[in-house]
Length: 59
Image 1 (cartoon, one colour):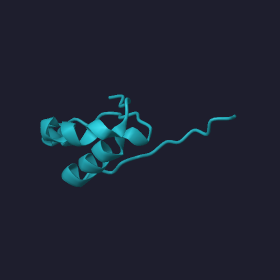
Image 2: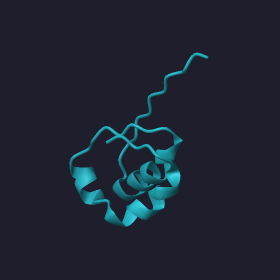
Image 3: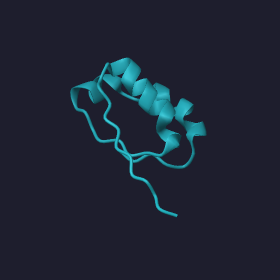
Image 4: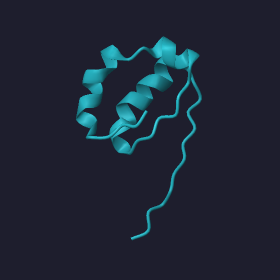
């Protein structure tokens, strides 16, 4: 799942996310800071361990 387009829509998507399905079938989620709301909800509702990967962007 790739999240983009600004984080203001994250709160609006939360009621439609099937957290039980995510807990049963974990997926890779790619995002910048706009996915913070959704990632926090996944972590809270599924008690899954989140793994973060960061890559520095050179100027």
